[in-house]
Length: 354
Image 1 (cartoon, one colour):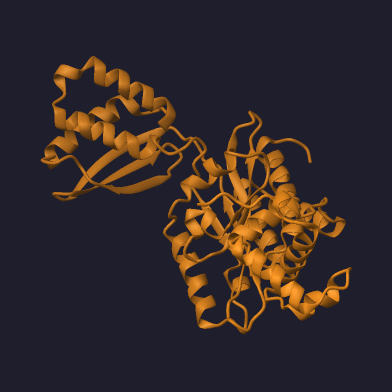
Image 2: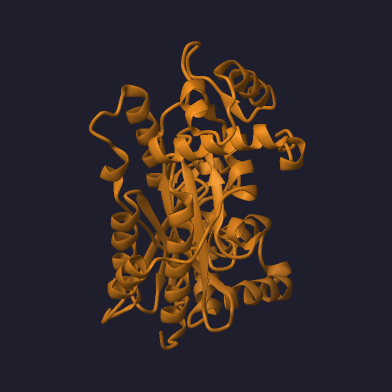
């Protein structure tokens, strides 16, 4: 990706034209023409001069034109420049604050709070909400490997609280069903009562201790089986909540827009790259904004994501809340909403008073 154009490279007129185009786009989602801009600019400038300025901005990769005779729209690169340098973000409004707090009052448990948060974010922002639930670390009760085909196997993990996880994986070449049973018997003999994180270290020690007694295939299977559960980033979510699909489907949506939304939810339902969301939020403080192709999850649909992590009492990121929508989101309003929701969710998870 090419480096973004710094605002310092734009003169005052170019910066003002660019700002007006982006603000109009965020408000309407429509292209902006030179005649409209000539009525909005403080200085008296001809439409021809404005068109030249727009062409310069287009040359810099900040604007594009959907049709030859149409006005201009900001590119994803232009939106990034605006969000980083020109967007004015205040605090969450009193009305929005009240709605957020009300949604989390008298919740019987964390899962209910997460469900309510998703519905609330979707309703307030008229976008789709995304909530990544915190991971629960339950002790392991039983593990089993089931051979499905020479190149496919199923691992079943049962936790002490009754949760069951099923994952498909590719076993090492030549792995037999009997070898899988032996590996499962070994794992069950040493793992019961331990969480996955605890078990990671136990397995490493046991493999070293019984190296001579374990054949190479069993060793590979153990390592692969453990990786299935242990290699996710710290705080990887167990549950994804998505609300508000209908909010992204406007009555006058054309075929291209419908296809964009379909691609977005296909990605979500397959949970493609969702594990990366928490690691992405860790790269910066507070709310992060991903525009179009900046987030691999939404690269095909061209949607934007405003997301913020929330932390437990140990200041460890355990989940995230966010809003998904078209690139002309009302970022100035949605960013503080997402930020405040994440703060309240963190207090709830930590058991702190609001």
